[in-house]
Image 1 (cartoon, rainbow, N blue to C red):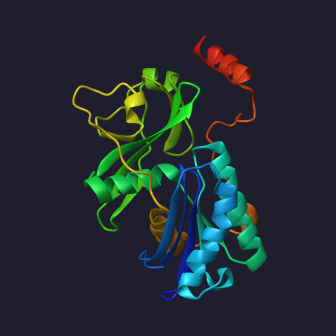
Image 2 (cartoon, helix red, strand yellow):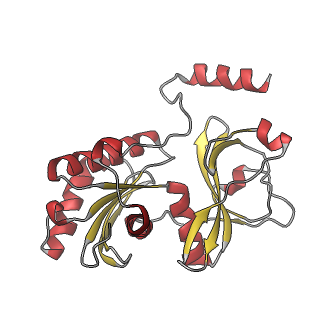
Length: 250
């Protein structure tokens, strides 16, 4: 469980960036570096880790945990992020804390725009988005997932998951009129539903959320630090995915 003097190494390559941060177990950012763009993440992330650790005179083995953005989002970014987190955790016997990309978006919406209720929306391609509903826990200052009861129409246009994250079709509507953040314009907003573009969360936000998870639930071993894709057939060809979608809509 949490050590008041511990530090968490946080990683993100799921958004269009390479971001690394050190966050203490109280959730305060100690150091952070972010490089925009996703063209060279495999070459950038480990040198960035070294730079951030060196800036504080610490090593991976000194970490209380390694936090990483586990998705959903860009498949290649998720694979890079998960692989690096697992490799570092295995090599140095440090536990991992997987963090939701959608929760990180919602947390950024609260911190940057004061949105206490929001839908985090990420373009999933294939005429779909990744979608999650979140509301502020005033006691912790953290946005927490809300599991919604979907209407028949919403259920028909989405792929519900056993948690608060799901796939939804372009042009579908949400049950509530909470703000849509990030790629919300791909949905069909209600008349009084704002659509807000926000910056991608940095690794510092991943670390902040991980610190809260660590304090309550601890971490998981490297082999249990798994990605979340939501689209379970990500390996299929575009034609195969389109055929599956046609079957669902038939």
